[in-house]
Length: 188
Image 1 (cartoon, helix red, strand yellow):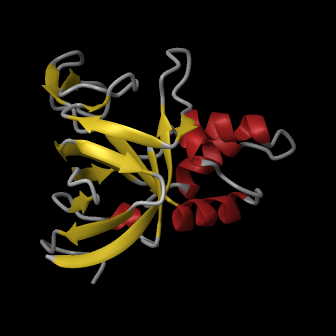
Image 2 (tube, one colour):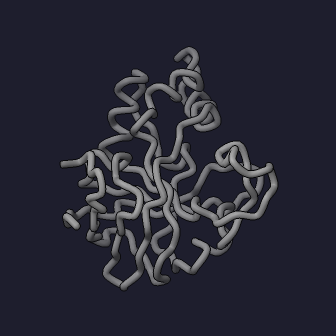
């Protein structure tokens, strides 16, 4: 596996049941299942439109315990949308990293390792949808159709979803080691 490095720029929690929008925190203790109190916490979840192979509501492995986005990809989304910035909170992200310009292309099975020993396993791309676009629109009322335009701008830039492979603590500014699963690695 190829090794690369990135830095945790910010950590976020989605603990308001009224919204997917996250709020920034300084550190977090990862458990099997993700971040306790986060809307996506749990070892299992119910199948929804993202898993059409199972009847809706079927209990399945929760592949979406942690959502990660990168500074570089958010900057490209903002540029394409013609807005000043796209904040990770607006996308419901749990982690913002810097130093991996094509985070979303990280292959399934890649590992993200933290100084505490905590580890995440990449479960794939987080597909863009209009809900974060609606949130972006709230902050830029003078721009038209951002919800719709976000789906295109966020394609292959929306970040990844991960599962906790090893519990531990994550701190803002942690340097993380990323072990890229080189099975059909698009980053080479």
